Length: 227
Ligand SMILES: [Zn+2]
Ligand SMILES: [Zn+2]
Image (cartoon, rainbow, N blue to C red; front, side):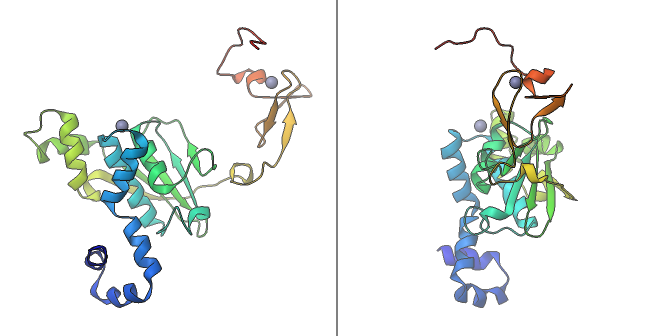
């Protein structure tokens, strides 16, 4: 059944290739939409339009940059920039295998349903953005759906990529200190004494500071030494 699926997806003359390159066939199967959605739902905790959109967005992005096995042999060749911290972000992580912890997922806080997929081997990068009008169009696919959410959930599964997304070729510069691998530097903040790595320190008035002590902290310290 799986062999049949893969051979349908490809042109006739690729069938011979499939037989002789089982590795390629295996990679193609890993990229099956239903399988990827199941896995994404399991990790995310529920099925939602964001999972469907995120899985499709990732499959499209990976295909465009020529990555067939993101969690296997291609795992060191990919970085994803996500522009949203929403349901779809988990799907992108699930499909691509990219994560903050691996430094292969970069969160860019734009509040947009978009992600950029970078092939580190070739430098090719595409930015995929969900079309605003697809939200409305989903209702036309399932006018009888009980609400917008239900319509989107089902429609996104069957809507063609062209209706769901815009794709643009982009150029992305990734600094050495943002790449996976060992930290390039590790310094102590002169004010709080905490350590800062990956060149995130700030130099101010002859001092080395962490960003929080330099004035751009997201927290205000209330009490020290809780234990
Ligand atoms: Zn969700
Ligand atoms: Zn500090």
